[in-house]
Amino acid sequence: MKKAFSLIEVIFVLVILGIVASLSSQIIVQVYENYITQRAIYNVSTKTELVANQIVNRLTYRIQGSTISKQHQNFLNNKLSGTPAAIAADDWLPLKDIPTGEEYTSIEWIGYDNDSFSARQNPAWSGIADYENASRNAFTTPGSNLGDAATIMSNLSGGQVDLTTTPAAILFAQDDNYYTDTAEYNPQCMGLIREVDANTSCIFPVLQSGADGLNFTRAQDPNNATVLPKIITERYKMAWSAYAIAPEDRDGDANNDGIDDDGLYDLVLYYNYQPWNGESYMDDTTPRSTLMRNVTIFKFSENGGVINFKLCASENIGQDFNVTTCKQKVVIR
Image (cartoon, rainbow, N blue to C red; front, side, top):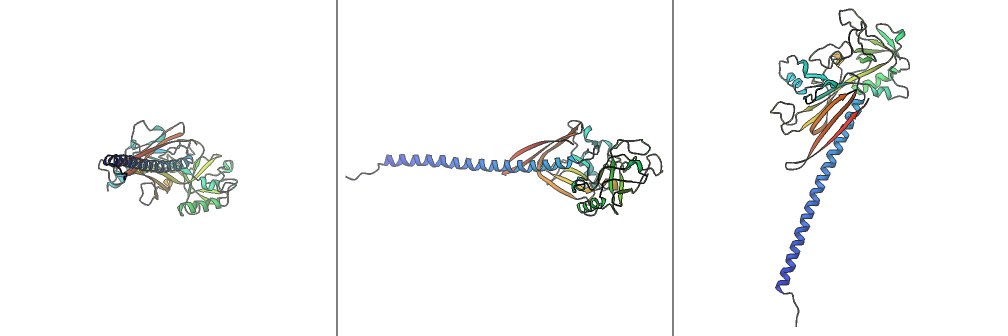
């Protein structure tokens, strides 16, 4: 007699196989979805960390007192209006004065030239001024090799600053700006708010004079036309560029609020512009680079000279599903 499976046994086996196949497919789908999600989280987390570190590195070399924030969209709208009007005084503030909850979206500062300062075993510019023997028009900076500094600045700026025909900027390490001791360093006299006040009198452009000499290219007094350069103190910082980080629309801003309609925007770095020569990051010729796309939050504050900022970005994992990660950093000078 020949043995065989009964119909009930066959059906039972098929049911079990169906259940196993169903569970296996669900597990495979779940594993794949987890992989896609984890990969997206890793990618956006890595990119956010890298960009946050770039911002920290640049802000570390900011000139004290030069860091400000602007209501970027107001400046942008003014530029695009065709008939630019005066920018309101409260459309910008020093970073340390930004009130909680206010929509100041950009951050701008002058960065001292750490590249030529640290490129040699002995700094190309020493940061020390022979103030006791300085004149109203020039001073020497012992221990400097300004020829090397000029080469490095020229290479980095694409010839925008070469210390021979195009000046760098000098800021001395004391609060009062003028020979007459009437004002303190502030963002307006640094030229960072050109749209409000074109005064750049507390920054003095300089050109090289020999291996360790610097000549002022202009000088002024706040009260009259008398040529009076700034008080020269023992220590100084040299700068060849200002920097700004601001949000930019990705594909539309119907609300005209500076944020893309889908809540995402690009974070853009502006660089290689010289406010002491009347330039602004709003100029069409100012170089810019996208630091990160799909940014959802970029907020910052300053307290006691310490900058704290938060950067959040999103990555799409299919259809309308996104993953978001945030990084918070502190910048201590």
